[in-house]
Image 1 (cartoon, helix red, strand yellow):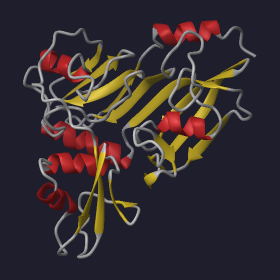
Image 2: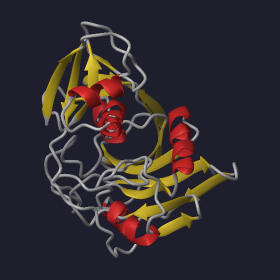
Image 3: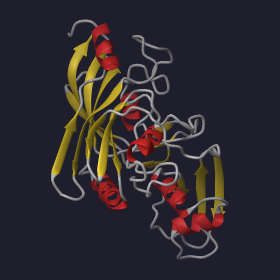
Length: 305
């Protein structure tokens, strides 16, 4: 990753337009994605796309590593489609699948599979590399993810993410035994000052992050929990659980640095999804079973306490 510093020469221009003008090769849509990710700051404050910096402000822009120049191709990859109509598609993503092409993962992604399954029927708002993608889940996180088939649906679902009416519930196995049956972690998340590829509580340009958790089952040394996101920051559950001393089992980025119970990568599954259908305005509630790897981990933990 690289950091670019921009000194604003005049007031009044929207930050997304300003970035597109100052940073070579950066489109306005790409600038907006950087803003949404908290990668654009001024005086330590994360900027929003409708902010208008003042003359003399110094803007910091953290740019991701350049993606390899690859043409986004449709690939015949099987999908576990949980719900689909003319506006949206909800997929039960398997563990190990990357959501969209990125450096090191130019193909074999959910986007490649969606392009084959949906043809040209995907929203363009997500950008050239992320058509239809409304939200993301990590490569080693399994479970429900929603994509939009047109811009109307994408805008409506993005608004639900913003006002928190789109609900996402996860299940996870965390290390350690919780002292309470439920709780809330309210701690802002930003990019780690030590490692730009990691997130951290109180990191650079930290933004509000709230995770509600409850215990489902207790095991010796581990706990099966349910987490409901009130916000949707990158790696939020993983960072918050590590922050309170209970990193997710298998998470070698934020937790223990060796595989446990035969698992490399966090034991985390997006189990429930609730949203208001963008066209019918009817509530939609979807739920999946725990995947095989998750059930296997629970079996290896032994009897419940």
